[in-house]
Image 1: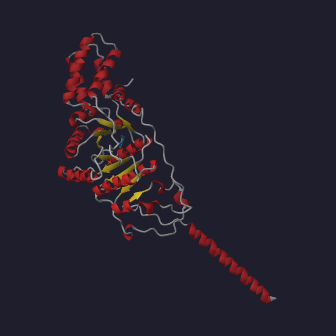
Image 2: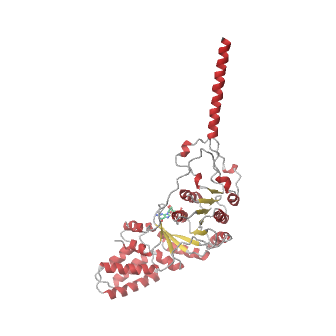
Length: 408
Ligand code: GDP
């Protein structure tokens, strides 16, 4: 009897141990595989991004490999083997991240009015107040001139505008506030010129449209590239991002975050890597996945003009091995005034700028820089940055811009 009891106890213990092993074994199977290290040159598929909060629930029992332990492929190799990264992970993989639906772009510029309304001395309002004075004497005209110059409009356009206003006010005789507003609106719109402000993202050939974004670091270049991806996605296009700003630490992460939010793939390389090879790989990837547009963020170091020329020139040449660039957008910070114009000049000598993006218009009451920079480069302002929000990038429309400047 004792013997039977001992055998039964032994059997129970054995079953308990075995089932314990099975459970822990199952647990092991539920572990997600090691994630690819984020710093390797790679193409990042947006669905790899976990939800906020997923991290806490996901057991991470496998030690993470350090960058040094990983055999880094070149950016080109990474592009050539995207399938390896795209393979579904495991059944228990985190759910695909929610892809945001960006706002439509139409009418975005209207919000500039609200942002400028906070500032009492916007260019348009200042001019309107001066023009409404009972006596438009020489001193007043000088003040009008001063207002335009202070708002960065530039000397030649200021002179032109003042001459036109003087002439038209004289013809008008008595001036009602509405008449003055209409007159000023017309003249300011005329000063902004009649340009094709389309951002060209369609290639005439059977390849994706390629847009290169250039500008001094800090102007909002990476943010603009990310916002532009959203604009394109909102318009129903598929986008690949090239993180060729390898100079600024975190620029690639920043761009990838923008891309992930709207489901755009980001091609990136190691920090300090060769921007041209990343740009090349991004276009190659865009062609491979039949994307509509490839956006390339570049580094804007104004160390020397030759250095910049070498760097951007190389990126451009290398990208053009796939086909011509469709758009080269120069990003300028509207709050930097004359400094922005100097930057514009240097970049225009280095690459053929086809459009200007003026960022941080929400941060300046001036706005005259739009006129000055177009005159300087003979290239239109195509987009404007109105804030730090993801959809704060608007197509530039002279009428809506002037309405925002003049206010109610
Ligand atoms: P980059 O070095 O040129 O790539 O500059 P970033 O894209 O990192 O932008 C620099 C800073 O400018 C960031 O804090 C952005 O949020 C901010 N920024 C960019 N565009 C705008 C804009 O239109 N308005 C405002 N207020 N801030 C902006």
